[in-house]
Each structure stands twice: as structure tokens, then as C-alpha cells.
Image 1 (tube, helix red, strand yellow):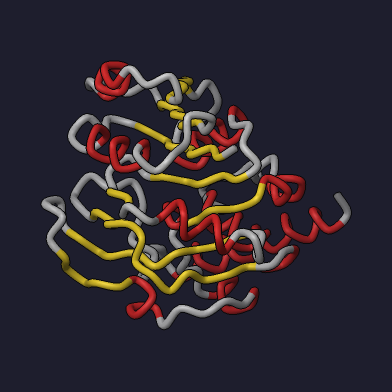
Image 2: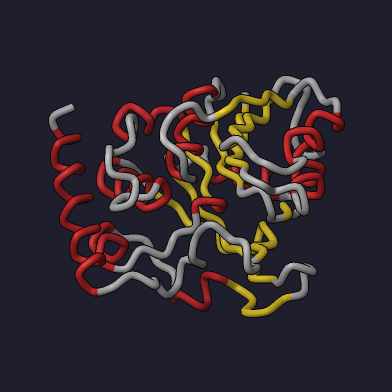
Length: 235
């Protein structure tokens, strides 16, 4: 069983297109877990109008923000394979099939993505090429560049990953999953652009290449996350 976990917040403009690109790749036994951060627009109504029994909508009753919203979605999921999805991208038609094949060999896999604008016109192209993508714990501790929306993983990694660290500002969900995967498990890269990674003025997170954080905050993020990771060694 596959669970696709989507964190939504005021995503009415793109959510329908994204969900249709996902649902056509899933079987009748799979599920799409939507965790909504109490959107003030028509996001939830648009999702309900799709009327697909595989979609399960929950509201995030924990702290606000995309990291807790994703954690809520993951906690509500039941699949042995979990995909993360942003609300505004588009999945290419072979994403699920390709990623599942890689997950036969790896615990966490990350696919390449095509950077596009709000009209799905290619801008920067391949994310992997932009970041000269490679695996490695130290590499991603110091310069994280995996995109959460490109991740698929086995449920087994949640034994170490959950609960997410308390301070979501210093340890976002995709950075945490990156560190957990690289430190404890086997990580694989899928050198194929499997999503259209839409970048626009309303994105909740940076694009995974250049961080807007100050030097002090970068140090704080790495020290805090490393300490949290050390604690998981004894979990």
C-alpha cells in the first residue's frame, strides 16, 4: 500500500492539478493523506469535489507550519511506502512506478525534479544538475539540497524519524528526513526528473539550492539537528 502525504495551506490555485497527476498513478488500495493547516481559501472544498475515496482529509491540530503539517499527514498514513508531495507541483506519469522500483533496493529515495514557473514553463531545469547532487551524510548535514517533495521512503525509517524534533524552525521535515536517511539507512538517487517543481511567489519553502538563512541561523540549524540525531541513536 502506498500513502501520498500532502500538506496544504491556501493552495486552491494548484491543488486540483496536482491531485489529478497523483491519483492516476495509484491503485484502488492506495491513499492520499491531505493534512490542511486550516486554509482560508477553497482548498478543502476543491479537494472534496474530486470525490475520490482514496483521498482522506485531516486538519492539522498541532503547531502551524509545513513541517508539523507534514508530520500530521505522515502520522495519519498507513502505507508501507510513503511519498511526500507539495500542493502545487505536478507529478510526471512514471513517478510512482519508478520510485517504487528504487525502493526495492533503498530505504529512502530522492528523484530529480524540473524547476518550472507557475505556468509550468521550465526555468532552471534539473535540480540535480543545479546542485551537483550526490548522497552522503556530511554533505547534506552541511549543505542540504534534497527536496522533500521528491522523497519516497519505506515506513521503517519512521522508527527513527518520528516524532520530528520539537523546534521545526531549526529542523524542517525534509532536512530531518535527509539526516535520518543518510545516517541510519540506505539512500538512493533517481536520476530522472519525475516532478514539475513549481516555484512562485507563494511557495512556503526555498528551492533547496540557496538558503536565505543568516550564517548564525545556519550554524544553529546544524548544531540543533545534529544533537537531535545523536539522541535518536539511543532510541
